[in-house]
Image (cartoon, rainbow over all chains, first blue to last red; front, side, top):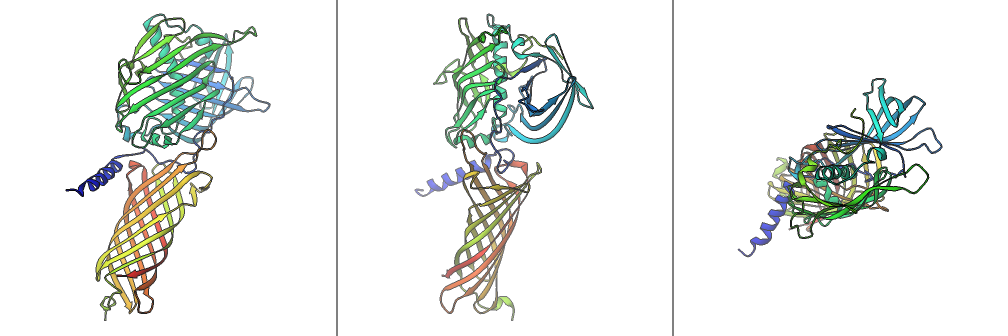
Length: 336
Length: 186
């Protein structure tokens, strides 16, 4: 009997390896993060109950083309980001996408069967007829391209963001989550088993500025830390702080730590940026005690986010509020 | 006199030597990864005319092509290594005294681990695989003089159809290993 221990251990490890899955193959030589932060650039938003679409059009820097990102976050949290370059005429804009990021909602399937965040090279063009009227940007599809519709400037759309009631707090939490989902979509393998590659931590740039660092404790202790530093994907909405997930190999555990947020906007009179709203989201307590967000198979399944607004109240936002990403209640944008 | 009727070199032969490993992985997403590696191979044949054979190769990728684009391993991965193993039912064929050909057919395993470098604040993603399939071995040995020492060469080929790490994304995998051997008879 004495000699069976190592044998059983070896069999257990083999079975564990055999049962595991890292999603699709990685690409040899794939750079983790090709993003070059663009600095403060115009961001546009369109929110409907079904999806939220955000576009960053960087200002051309002396050349005819400039970078863009087109982020679409579906009601069920699935996210697609297209990045590339565009050039514009007085009436049209031509987008050429070169990278496509996808993070599907895979909460209903086991962690080991998920793909996680993926990135692929694309070569896709799209042409839109443009118009700006009353601060509303309209992108009408041309040459066979589907129409994107009308967009508001992101700072204007969020100008009235507040949290004095539970409903407002819930909506603010969803707005906060737009930046979080956008960041996670660009972390290769995020929300899938390929995340174990971050036992060797890596940092990913924000679209506009700052970065997010991801680190996993070890292969067999997949506790994961996301750390935001001056992270901005959409003009004026900044994240700082960390989110810590403590889980077993099946993704069962809880979230803790906190991420601060700040929404600022240019007053338009040359003065300093003014703060629209700031505060923090606490994911949970270090020991996982209530109201920490509980994870079941890598999926939030209990507890509450603690959302506090500086100079205001603190709200408990149920974990299931983020199951539906619909920000139309607090973001003033066209509905199409 | 048949080829197999000549006496085998010995009941158990253990050999080791340098080798070249080619690993090709085709995915259902349409990607092709090709790794070329130097390695060191241990090859053993046990039993009589019919027996058991294994080749165990530890290899270290030095060159890679992803969809026909060359990737510099040393500038992309902090560590890169792999193993390639075939466990085979073997048949010994002796052409003349002192020269033996072992042919084997059996399950094949190939594992690759490449840890992406972290350069500056970011770096490169990891690459790994653990494919299973069927492989064939051919080991040619020649006894040096009358002593227990033999030298030889081997080649093996394998087709893989399952990857334990990447589920259903493997389309087909191929492995080719070849090298020289020196060893002893026990």
